[in-house]
Image 1: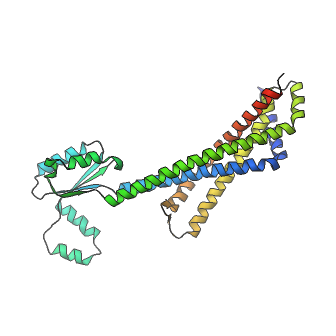
Image 2 (image 1 turned 45 degrees about the vertical axis):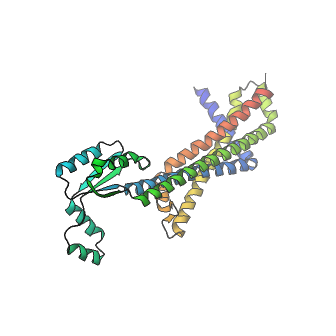
Image 3 (image 1 turned 180 degrees about the vertical axis):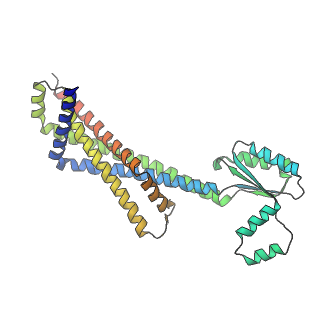
Length: 314
């Protein structure tokens, strides 16, 4: 056990020394890895921000069913029960005529003409049922139910489907899907480039130390002992790249928050994105470090395995 610990620290120390020694040829690998991890982190934050925007708009969308004045309480109760039984219905809220009038007065409190017109007439507003769907992309079953002859006969006017908000949801969902796909493609492309550069960097380091490695093999060093420092060196690339990428994104959000007067930039809610990044900082930093180290370690493992397999056969 003691020997294993000593060997581990020797590998770690050698890897750090090699990193310092080869830093000048490692800059390209670190730079490409920074780009890869920055794109990945930005994609995660943007995707979370768009998802939040969709949730906020979705919370405002419902289907309003306007009832006739002559509908009986039993008919209304039966309709509410049937609506609640539909698979895509999240909640059903019933407002009688007086509640609808109060809601209307609150919503139009600043419009004196409307307030005066309502006060001078009997309540013209119908009792209303507000239906909140679970999935906006699958409300056809609710629409089909509402157009049934016996259900339609209970309504004073056609239902309201909040069409403009539904279009906004569709636009944001489409933009989120496109950006997510572009982010995945960009991360994959830069990840492959990053792995190739690290692979070549490690191959160059191996070539520069080929005589030293050969002597280590002749002295009985096993492949894991030889491979270890290169994996540590590549892991340091990933660690530094992860930290730099987080610093870049943090600087980006700080700059955007301080220079932009608006809280949103197009569909992107800058305020929420900044808040999300701050609240999940440690998780995102840990994720970046793990991914960076993994990319570096895997690349180094492949590079050293190939060299040890073909160049150092006993």
